[in-house]
Length: 292
Image 1 (cartoon, rainbow, N blue to C red):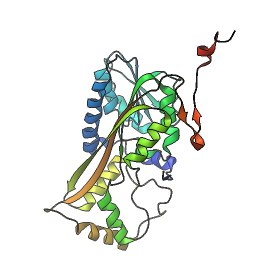
Image 2: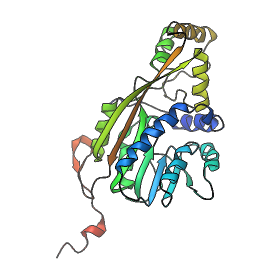
Image 3: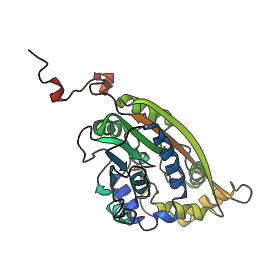
Image 4: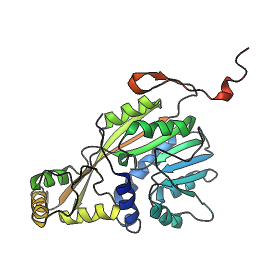
């Protein structure tokens, strides 16, 4: 599996800066959110705790609270300004908690979450094994993980346009569905179901797409990105290259979206560790009294 080197401080900064503009540009995020809510139809229990990882401005958290009004809903995000913006979606009648934390270090007790939800956040975690290990740790046995992420064809037109201008990395890279599925299985999550959808958003000019990305905070966070300002000449070459891709009078932008769900494993189920070693874990309480 390719290990992308993302810059967490850059990610927190860029999404924090976009907290005030995010909801002006999140049309795709809302569409994908509806797909995740549909997947929750497979969860037939009444959850006590629902956690939204990468909650952003809290639209998804509010929808989860609306769906599960008796559950404790917790919105978790790395960017504190996003959580501050999410307050407007947390009403006194249907409140949700807001916690600033990383997806790979959730401030939650083991096996304490019934539904773990994440909409277009996991692509900002550069190594999947610790991410899904953390999901397994906090999920109750039989609890549901439902998430979405971007695939490698996302923004392929913009990536190709920049390639005409220089050899630097200007667009973040994303993992293939098969890599995501392998990581889910390796962590021990059960019965994963993954699907891929491709969306094409259109713009009047390339600059409009760049404005959307800036407004969302979804700019390049690879450590390999070029530091400093991009020269005007290279920027203009990129725009000209993108213009050559115009179809039916519009500038296309492809978004490859992976949606998935899986289930928390029973206590003690073996999972693959480093080197392919099978690891099984049990709580101390489950072992007490078993020896004579």
